Every structure is written in C-alpha cells, then in structure tokens.
Image 1 (cartoon, rainbow, N blue to C red):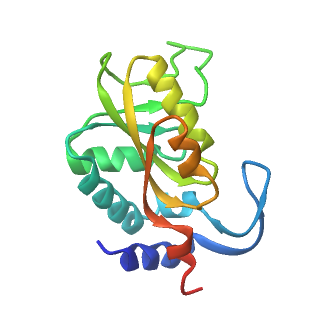
Image 2 (cartoon, one colour):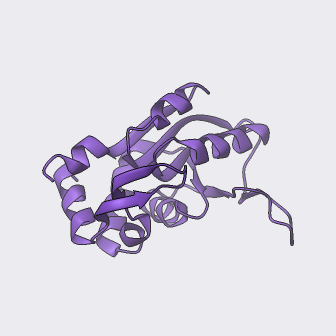
Length: 173
C-alpha cells in the first residue's frame, strides 16, 4: 500500500472534513479526520490493517478503546498476532479490568491507535500497560496530526510511528 492509496481511501470514505471542529483536547481545527468513517469502511480498514501488519512483526498488539478496537482486531486477523484492549478506565462491573485479553508480565506489545493529536490517550494506554508489567516501546497510529503526540510519547520513551501525517494527508487539499 502506498500513502497515496490510503489518502485516497480516507477521502473516498469522506473521513477528511474541512470546517471548524472542536477536538477532544479542547482545541479547534480547520480539519477533522473522522475515525468512525474510516474504521467502518472495509477498504480503509483493510489498507490500515495491512500497513500495520507490515510494521508489527510477531509482536502482540494492544488497541486503545474504543477507537482502535476495529484497527487492532483487523490487524490481528491479518497477522495472526493476539491482542489486548486497553480501556480508558477499569470497568465497574464484571471482572473490573482495565486491560481486556491475555498478556504475560514482561511481554512486549505495540499499541495501535487511530489518530494522535496530543497523544494523551496513547500515553494513558502505555502507562496502564506498563503498570500491568507489559513492555511498550512503540505506538502506531493511522494519522499523526503533528500537534505534540510524538513529543509527548517520546517523553515516556515511546516511539510514535504513523501511516500518515497531517502534512501528507492535507498536502493536495
């Protein structure tokens, strides 16, 4: 898959929107990448899963709930690698877990995420995994909005790798 193919698929899915949008961290933006449109589009999901699969090797996967769950599930199917899901907080019923799925102390995982803006949800997931005894050195995202996510992850010794950056996605706007 080329960057151009993924960009075209995201745009064909109408996942790239222009206007004025409030972002989860409270800031505003002139563009928005609608993760739910690209994550529910079979062509986008296939391209993303294949691209992630090329980058993860045989490492266990972790997906940040809710947005990265389709991505991690599709990548797991593409690679045969098992995965865990990291919730924003432990659920208050049933098993009351924050991390769903099986993992071992000292096991290495790569975290998959949809979009990185400040990277805070990825940072929170990495910290939860590390507290549970899992080794995390890398986060893979579909789009890096280039608004501090890479730096915030670097602050906790985690490398951010993106399939696309905002600059690439918006280059031919």
